[in-house]
Image (cartoon, rainbow, N blue to C red; front, side):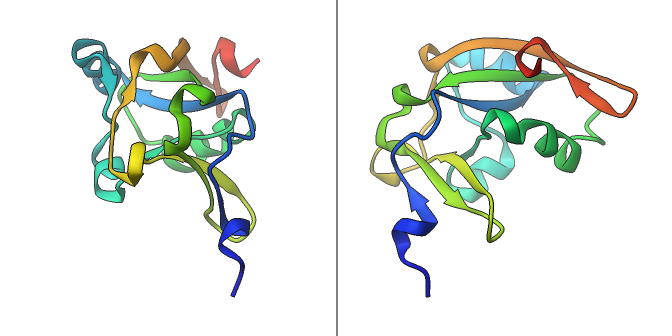
Length: 132
């Protein structure tokens, strides 16, 4: 059995983490003042995030059939504190997940979002200024 420290790490390894949001979720986040995530996040008990180099594959694997407009949110990792946990999800890729303080499901505060951009899809590839 692997050591637990090899499977998860609470220390941010990147300056920014990224959230892919639908326009409905992004509009709701503006209205509420925080990012609550979607149904999958709430049922998982954490908000799913990606490192920049993981965004394109996450989009390709999970968002190809989403008809709603998508936005990429750049989030300052250090503002998430110890609620940001990096976890091994498939035996080789470690993804950032936001659990919140004391590992209780918590929204991401809007002041942690440093940038956002609408994602476009063309020629089988997703694009936005944050992915360039």
